Structures are given as structure tokens and as C-alpha cells.
Amino acid sequence: MHRTRALRLSATALIAAALLAGCGTSGAHHETDKPAALSAASDSPYRGTAMNPGFAKPDLVLTDTTDKPFDLRKQTAGKTTLVFFGYTNCPDVCPTTMSDISAALAQQPQTVRDNVQVVFVTTDPERDAPESLGTWLKSFGPNFTGLSGDLAKVKKAALSVGISVEDPTKHHDGTVTSDHGTQVVAFTPDDNKGRVVYTHGTTVDDFAHDLPLLVQNAP
Image 1 (cartoon, rainbow, N blue to C red):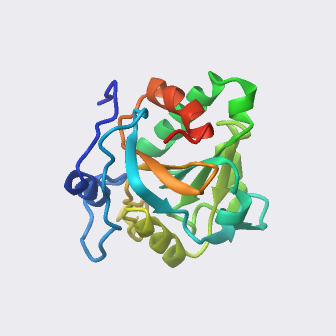
Image 2: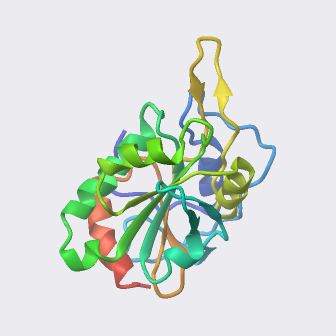
């Protein structure tokens, strides 16, 4: 169910969301690892949940959709970067979230679009090879970059920003699902810090409102 405004959640609620909000058959996560601790800023111009002091951008090198190494920190430096962990065969949350961000970007002036990068990190690298991941993301626009690679690295990177990712599960009918947190983490350009978290249910209008503020590195 969509909300008109992303809630400003307490640290406890955000941790619960990271563990339980998932995209798979059950959506439940086994608490084998703890996500990074979260704390919400009390006042902010953003409709997403502003974080204080913010997350460090994960030190993550994977393969992009052109089959080349992609250093997340280095190759997104100086740009507002939205990071999402998901998979292309996701039945609901992943395509909806990417579509909403794409629609919000379409409303922005060129100066904003030129300074926003969306990074989709697959949680199902066995099926999301670089070429297929690139084909899937192409429909969302040129701002979208896909990364695939070692799942252990992906899980560690996700946990560092408070998001839980589990190993894909193969079912009796041959389908595969991947339970993962559904948050989008926005990193501001000046300091590469994850300053705002968007939970599932964030609207196109919410993203459209916040994108110019993120590009401006609003406090």
C-alpha cells in the first residue's frame, strides 16, 4: 500500500524493516546477521527518512552490465547515488521501485538528471548475468546501472547500510526467489554518505520532491 509520505521511523522500526521487508515468497528473514544500526534524524527537508550521521558508501567492486569491473565508491563519486538491492525476476517490489524512481527522474530538469545515478545490485547473480541485467534495466533509462558478482560481497555491502539479503531459494516448481530488504539508500554527492533511506511504499512524488534536494546536498 502506498503512502503519501515516507515515515520518519525510529531506529528500532528501521532495523525491523531491514530484517522483515522482503521480496520473495514469504518475505521473512532469518536473523543470522544483524544489519548496521540505524538512527533517524529528527528534522529534515526530505520526505524519505534522513539518517544522522549517515552511512559510508559500501566499498564494493562488482561487474557492470558491460562485463567490466565497477567500483561503487570511485565510479559514483560526486553524484547523487541511489542504491537498491534486488533481482530481475522479482514479482513486485523491484520493478515497481525502479519504475517509480524512473518516473520521478523524468520529472526533473536536465541538471538534476545529469547528477543522479541509480545502482541496482542483484541479489541473484547466478541468474542476473551482466547482459540480462542490462537488458532489464534499459527500460528504466540511462541513469540506471546494474551490478552483479559474488553474493557474499553483496550481502556484506547490504548489511553495512542496514539491509538484509538472503541466499536465493529454489522451489519445487523450479522457480527461484531472493528475500532482501526493500529500502533504497540515497548517497549525497559532496561526502558520499548515505543520508536518506526510502522504504517500500515511497511514492513517485516523494522521490521527485527529494531528488533536487539530494543533488544540492541539502542537510
